[in-house]
Image (cartoon, rainbow, N blue to C red; front, side):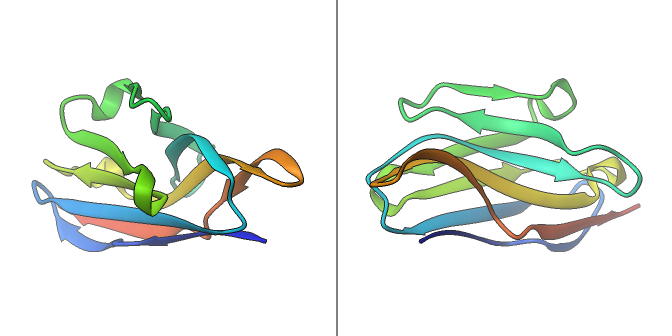
Length: 119
């Protein structure tokens, strides 16, 4: 059984900063890519940022220069540092990870954490 647990969401004013964390636990052999997605009301879920096991990163254009994704492989944790937040960043943020267990490789999702940016 593998679980992803997110934390760090909340309410912040425009221009502010917040850091999301997501920790994976369970019978994990290895974690490949980890990432953060978000879904705003009435919109499709979109990839915000992703990081490979080797540390290669990519971002959606709208957050480049403002968000930073990182990971601590020893802790099976991925972070999303969000700076210069804008109201349009308001969404439910989900972490995801491609995880190897004895059953094989599959993707897992966290439960989501709400970020609200007020103008």
